[in-house]
Length: 263
Image (tube, rainbow, N blue to C red; front, side):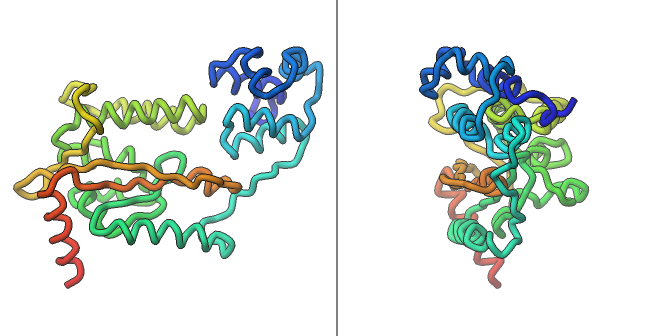
């Protein structure tokens, strides 16, 4: 049975449990009676369209899954999924490209909900310089690109630490979204060989990415940004990751590389 064929009450209960909330917790949070919530979850009461959206909002359900809840309840989806190339997405595209262009000479990329690369700036070629060609064929998955033995992994000086960071981040995303594709990606990433033990540092403010470049080591800190008020599934699932130099040497190398690209 597919997700959309399951009763809406069952799906709502699944999301409530995913958020580790009791019926009492959610009923207080959503300002409805525990009895009403129980009836909705067991199928004894059919929720209105507004109630489905209200509970989905309180449970912080991703927009894609809010549509599934509506379908399961017998209502039409309300959130569109517009191609990023569509004319009505021009403002979104412009905002994303301005962020990436403005971040030069430092790397920045845009990924979707399953870590597939949507766009990147010129500085990211630093990361892909020695990656096997098969990993650079679309769709390029940035988790695979980072941890695969034919990807960036051989150049990452703190691979055990960075791998632990990425896998923990992926686990958190799975906990939030319950996305099966992310579960499969996690299992794939876990299967990649890694000679370094996982390191969970307690002396860093931010876990750095340390990568070999020519005869030196570059260090980066990363920041992730998302649109704050998405009303479209595509926009809801975009994430912009920007990498900043963690030391002066890295900043100098990246500035010099931009000068070379402009020649």
